[in-house]
Picture 1: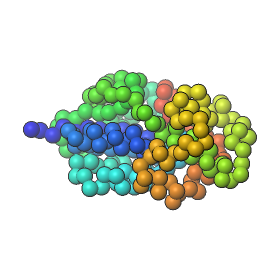
Picture 2: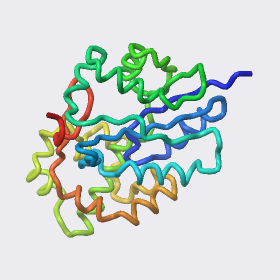
Picture 3: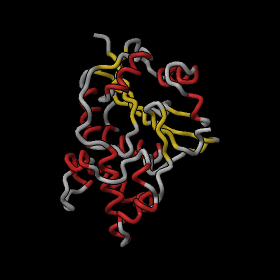
Picture 4: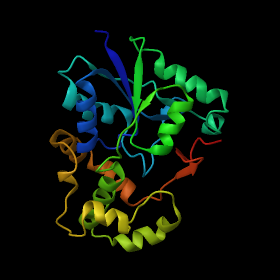
Length: 238
């Protein structure tokens, strides 16, 4: 029987237990291509508080989970090249269609489906003829993990989370730097709730090895903007 490809386009910043389950489930019936999103400006990857981990670190996280599986590949083809504004509005911008062509370039199979747990993203994937399958939203999101990561980093640095967030105008940014009520329902209010329970062990080790990244962005303003429902680094938007 012909193998069908499954395309998984996601931020994966960082990789969570939910991401691992999704990829593992897709791999049971498909050749899976994982595309961590990359933002480039003059050949350099742009990272922000929302997107702290580089493509190489995210690839390392994924390889630690799936390196022994021949039907799972991690590819860098889902890349936005500055100025990012040229990809907007989605569907109508010819650059957004060139992005689609780049994603499909290395797909060996003639037939494929794509995965997303977000209803709006599923509609967009349908417009791009990427054949999205119906799926539920992640139980644990990367945003939930980052909230706890940054909270722990500030605690270790002896800095007050509220003061840092107020200084950085976090309440007015698109990134949920504070635990709102919905986030509390997901990750729990207890300080003993650990991000380590929300990511695979090898991912936790990589995060700890690169803790300086967490400390840096825990104290930084989130230079990420949201346009047409899509998040982009502010650096490189124009």
